Length: 226
Picture 1 (cartoon, helix red, strand yellow):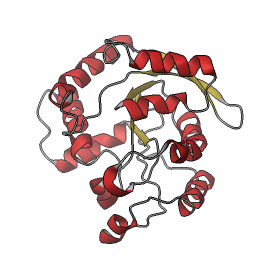
Picture 2 (cartoon, rainbow, N blue to C red; picture 1 turned 60 degrees about the horizontal axis):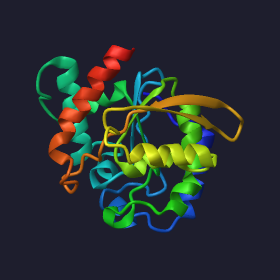
Picture 3 (cartoon, rainbow, N blue to C red; picture 1 turned 45 degrees about the horizontal axis):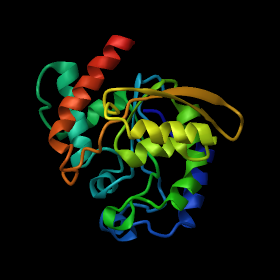
């Protein structure tokens, strides 16, 4: 399992200590440190990254991202795609996670599971961007939901922001893909290809039932492109 570099982990902890809105009650319920970032980096050479909004209750409980209800849907589709059979249990899905790179806009659970404000996302963005650029060698990113997709517009030139916002308005946004350039504070630049999908939440009534088929189509698309 890839690990967060010590200096970056400490920088995230320092930033979290100065951030209002972390759901410290849930962290206390599971005897978890509310300053510890919940990031499941997986293999640095993993061919695919899943980029989500923020951790929830189950993510705090297990100390891993994408392990709650929405994450289990993602993992079940992945397991079926790879093995041609249904995922047998929770631990099988958990083990599957090691073969992918998992990251969120902000690696801390917000109170009430509401999306973090743009101000908070903007504060954490340089560190999460550095993690994505420096700790993973892949290119293809499946973004889950509008918040995750438009995170890539933060601190971008106006033209890039407009391109991302216009892409999200397209009817084919869940089948088309978009290249985006990112650069960290040290000047390291990478080009990533975004493959947006809706957020796999039961509250997302418009897309929830269609999500597994959309993800499966993305996975087949990516198999063909690699």
